[in-house]
Amino acid sequence: MNTQKRYWTVLIMSLVLLSGWVPKVIGQRQIRHDIPLDAIRLSDPAILADSSSHMYYMTGTGGRLWKSKDLKKWTGPFSVVDIDSSLWMGERPAIWAAELHQYKGKYYYFATFTNNDVIIDTVAGTEVPRRASYVLRSDHPDGPYRAFGDEDYLPADWATLDGTFWESKEGTPYMVFCHEWLQTGDGTMEKIQLKDDLSGSIGESKLLFLASDSPWSKRKKEGKVIPNQVTDGPYLFRTATGRLGMIWTSWIYDVYTQGVAYSASGTLEGPWLQKERPITPPNFGHGMLFQTFEGKWLMAAHSHREENGKYIRIPHLFEVDLSGDELKIIGPYIP
Image (cartoon, rainbow, N blue to C red; front, side, top):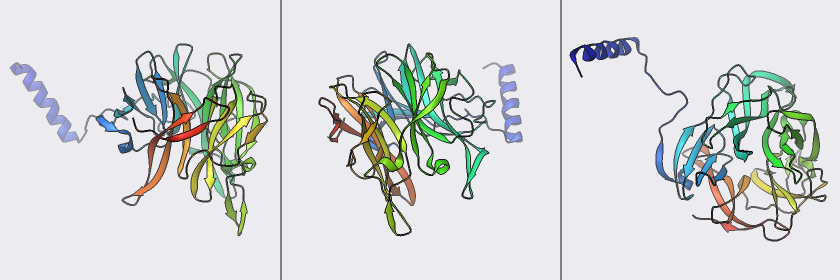
C-alpha cells in the first residue's frame, strides 16, 4: 500500500472509531458450514430439491436459507429476502413458514409476513396485527426473493398465514392458506386461484374445511373437551393412485400434532374427509413433502423442546410411502 492510500485508510478508520459507527451486512448472520440437521434451530422447515443445481435448499420461519448437497451437512443461514419497505409489511416484518416452489422457470417464496405496527382487528380484547400470506419471486433458488406482483393476494383486513402452492391437473395455480383462528374463532383452511404468473390472486377464496372438522384435535374449555380451533401448515400431495391429500397441523391439548385429510373429488373443491388419527408422532408438525434426487419421498417437519429455558424448534426428516392410496409414515430418516 502506498503512503497516500495508507494515510486515507488510517484517517477513515479513525473517523469510524470516533463516530461509533460499525459497518455491517444488513440481515446477514455468520455463515456456518457442515452443520447436521439436528443442530439447526428452525421452525416450519421446507426443502426444495432443485434438479438444475442438484442442491437442497431449506427455508422456514425467519427469512433464512440453508443449502446441502446430501441432506447430511448444511451451510447457512443465508439471508435471501429483499424486503420492499413501501409495501404493507413495513421495514422489518416477521417472516413465518416460508416455502420455495419452482414454477415455469422461476422460483417463488410463499411466506407469511407480519407487520406488528399495523392492527387490523381486535377480537375479545386481543389486537390482531396485519398478517398475510404473500409471494416473492427470484430467478435463482437461493434468491434474492423480491415482491413482483399485486399489493395484496388476500383481503387486507384478514389475518392469514401458511400459504402453500398447488397446481391442478388442468394447470391452474392456487394458494391454499389458513384464516387465523385469532380472528375467526374457528381457524379455516381455504383456497384461492392465482394468476398464471403467480403475481396476484383471482376472485374470492373458498372454504375447504374448519379446524373443528378434525376428529383428532382437542382442547379443554371450562372443563369440557372440545375441538381445537387452530389450522396450521397445509401441504398438498398426490399418492401414486392419484388421490389428493393434505397434511396440516393443530394441537391435541398442549401437544403440536399433524393430521391428514383427503379430497373425495380428487380436486381442491373437496369435500375434504379428515382421517381419525394423526399422521405423525406427537410433538411433530408443520410438515411438507419432497422427493430426493434418488427418488425417495421424505417429509420435513419440526419438533419442540426446551433447551436452557428456551423453547426451540428442530427440523426432522421422515421417510414416507406414497405408493398406495394413502400417505404412510415409514419412520425417521437419517441421511
